[in-house]
Structures are given as structure tokens and as C-alpha cells.
Image (cartoon, rainbow, N blue to C red; front, side, top):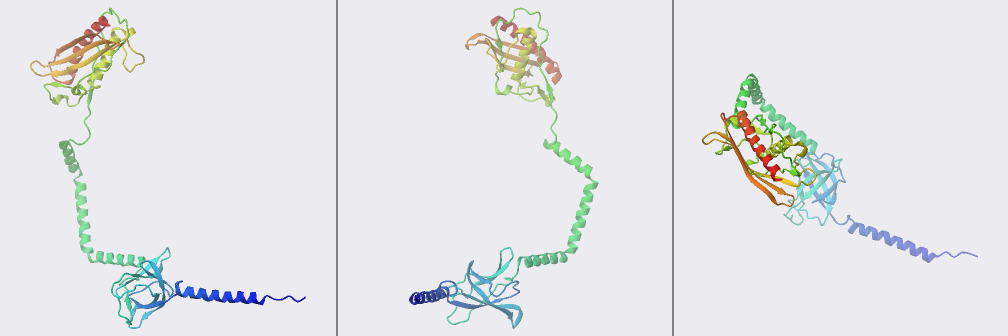
Length: 367
């Protein structure tokens, strides 16, 4: 039995293939980038390193065509003539700027077109003149810049030598007078209050050691919080009345701020009186039965009339419920023969010893 070939099917397939090929060619020529083209003549006024036939043409960064021809200008071999073919719809004008750009890591050259407003007359051949130095690569630009710098240095070699010689003379003069300059700078530092800070001398307040025989002792626990005081007394400096500073006390500092120093030495004094019933700080563990609250009123050197050290405290004994059990003012002064730190501290020690003894006896009776 003879097989009958499907001639109609084969013929239809061949015809469809031919139509598809023609359709592809039509699309490629009209919409695929090989449609209607316009050729333009471009002239570069210098070398165009690496530019080849087939290199891209970009208009405002968009590829619109290729370089189709390259050659040297017959009337001036320094110039390069090129023919570019771009899409007919590209808005090339007579004043369109032409340049050469190097793209990618390998520096592939492309012709660049940008802007333009003046429309060429109909039928007039359009020649685009590239900007001077358009084909200059980054390496060549760097060489030209270095060449110009070298020219400037060569033209000014004499003044540069004189300037260097003057600098050397100036530096030699500074080296010879280093000692004098250091002295001048040190004087300026002292005059303006600069330089290394002056070392302060720290003085402590001494708690009384000999408080006599121990009589009545504390029958309940006692705490001595940090005394209260006005802002002026929250300092480590020596205070004077009337206000002001004494030059002899410029480097003077108490071992701590006055309220903290009074608190510490009062606790020391109670311990020296009866170590078995020593008072606590409010930061210590446990809650005391009573608190000795101190407010510092005076802790200074009075210079009006007879020069003297003055200490004035306000004391209150408060139970754990906040009730004031007893209160009193404790004040004393000590004559100061010489207004200087060592004598002043000794006078404060004497005055504080009387204050501490009076407070201890009164507190033991009240608590």
C-alpha cells in the first residue's frame, strides 16, 4: 500500500516560514533599530584614540547609531573626519555638541551628542565640529596637566629657590633661639592662666581624741546623715567673712566638701567617745532609732574686728517616726593669730573639738 504524502500541509508550513522571515526583516528595518537612518559628517580637531568603525553613537546618553567611516582630513592631517549613521528621528541640530567619551573599565570610546537648538536648512549637508580636546583621554589629560605644572615650575625656578633659602634661614634662626622662644611662651602661659595646673594642698579636719571618761552611753541606735548647708558651703575651699579670697589660701583645699567633712568627723568623735555604740550613716544597713540632723550655718574665717574661726551648727534629734525629740544651736569661735592655712586648720580643730564634745553630751542625754 503506497503512503500518501501530505503535500498541502508541507506547502502551508513552507509558506508560513517565508512569511515569518519577511515579517522579521520588515520589523528589524522599521522598529528594531535599523530603520530609516541619517548620516552626518563629524570632524575632530585632534586625535581620537581607540575610536573604531562600528563604535556607538550616544545622544544624551541613549544609543542612536554607529560610526560608519573614519579617516584623516586631507587638508589637515591633525584633524579626523568621521561619518556617523543615526536614527532619522534623532534631533541633531547644527549646534549639537560632539564629544568623545570613554566608557567602562576598558575605556571603550563612543561618540557623544548633546543638545542643540538651531535647525539646519533643508537639503543643506550638516557637518558637526567636535569640541577641542574631545578625544583627550584621562591619561592624556593628566600628562598635559603635569606638563603645565612642570612648565610653571621651570619658569619660576629662581623665585622658588629664593623662597626655600629664606625658609632655611628662618628655621636656622628659630633653632638658635629655641631657649628664648620657650621662655616667651612660658611667660605667655603664666600671664593667660595656662600651663600645668598648680598642685593644690589638701587639709583635713581632726576629730577630738580625748573626750574625758565615758559617762552615759547611747541606749539606742543613732544615725548621722550628711549635714545640710547652703550652696556656698558646698565647697572644699576656705570661706571668709566678709566674702572674698585670701591670696595665701589660693592652693588650699579641705579633704572633702564641708558638709561631708563635718559628718565624717562627727562620726569619728562619737566613735572615740563610745566605740561600742558608734553611730551609723544613713547609707548603712538597718534603720536607726534616732537621727542626729545637722544644718551647717557657719564654717569660716571672720576677718572683721578680731580675726577668728567660726563654726555654727543647728542640731536636732529625730526619732524613727520623724518626731523631733530635741533641738539646739551649737556655736563657737577660736582666735586666729595668723591668717595662713596651717594656723587656720589648727584653730578649726580646736573649735570643732568643743562643738563635738557639746554635741555628744547633749545627744546622749536626748536619745
